[in-house]
Length: 297
Image (tube, rainbow, N blue to C red; front, side):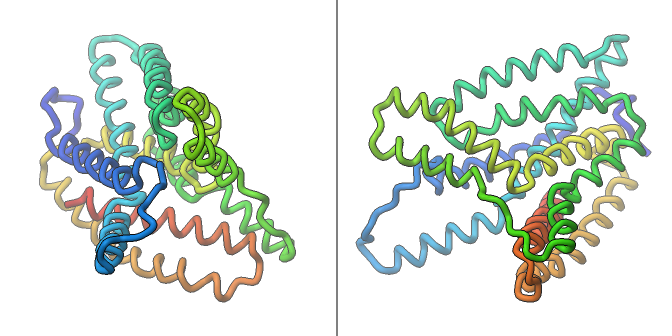
């Protein structure tokens, strides 16, 4: 099997996937008006409403949660490339990467001042998991990535809800912070909006990521990306071709049952806490399956 140990060549497929991911993210942010949720109260033609909804639903079906997942996978992969190149020179890349994450955090703050959906700050914080785990064995990284992908918080909710059927989910903070952000967008000045973006906007981002499983999923995808780099899975070879065909096959096999379960199970579960945990776990998994279908192509 090919690995990246013996090559310094540019991995074209990773660049293509990164381009697809960034394109998808930009398109979604564009139709969301970059979290400035102001839309015309009336449309000049009725069919505009149909086309708007079709475009919105179609694009979110294709890219919602998937473009971001590809980008997260490649973030871990890129870390491996840099770390591996430094190791071959006899250097330890971890301290330099920590410094780069600090710079990414500062750059993200600049971006966050103008956009409540900023993700670079989140990545800068989450990226430290790569530093903490990059010297572990492949087996340990795989086990940890699987555990994180299975959403430990949602599994806890499911277990607690089964033992306490009357338990209800706590109040979600993301909605509160986003509402506060939208109020400032409606009536605030430019500087008030900047201040809001750097506080309520950031809190909205991080609480949403925590409450919707993005924290665990992002960490998991970082680790899977690093592991893909170790295994050379983005290099051109017969082994990798078979691997990705099998991966797409399994992803397609599981995608529809998981989607069906996420739509059907709430009708058969009495516990609100179990319902929330189950749906969010299944949503995370079916988006992972769809992402693998895109990446495998």
